[in-house]
Image (cartoon, rainbow, N blue to C red):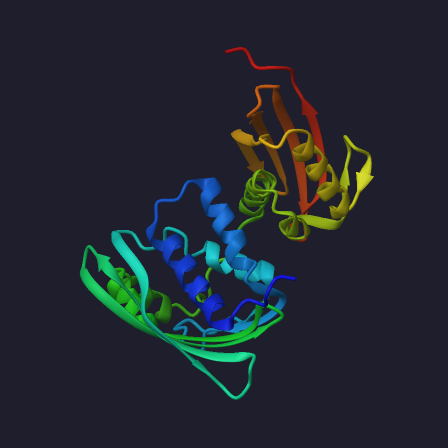
Length: 277
């Protein structure tokens, strides 16, 4: 039996993951994998808040909402050369589920060096964050990233109170990439986040995420080194078409997915023969 993750370690992993999203030049599949890993540190049902958010706190109630929130941070800070959590001190409380983390996000950008203080009050249960109050200096972030003017405009615009939700097309594209990232990593827990409970595979004439897990396990058992490489991806509204190359040179996959309620609801697919060199 694996030991229960330490709450302090989970908080450190969240801060480190956010830093990578903001400062690292990640390939699309690397970014999707990191977003899955970050969201996986939280419970399926959460209560995450940012009380100091200048445009108003928008509670994050589910793991899927957390993933969308983190995705909005990816590559957001143009001109940032380094960005990392520093001087973290985690305080235990009388409640064994609750820790308080004090640290700074420090780094350098085109506008100079910066250190933005943060305090997180986090409840961890069964190895995942289920509640968090994230107190950060949002004005300090805007100053470090050269976004003070845009923030000021947003504060005077009564129609702007939260980041825009991803479009249906963006969601379809993201789920298509996540599906392939999860297969390549054989990340079976991610299957329940990617596929709907009543997901239907037309090629297999089977239904449900458990069928996907069984199929992936069978494929990787037969060919442990098998991976897919996304070659083309076209998304529009609730549909996406993916052309991927199998790394064992046995051919290509053409897949069409339909997305509903934030998950893949249907999949059609065909496999071609070996690709000529």
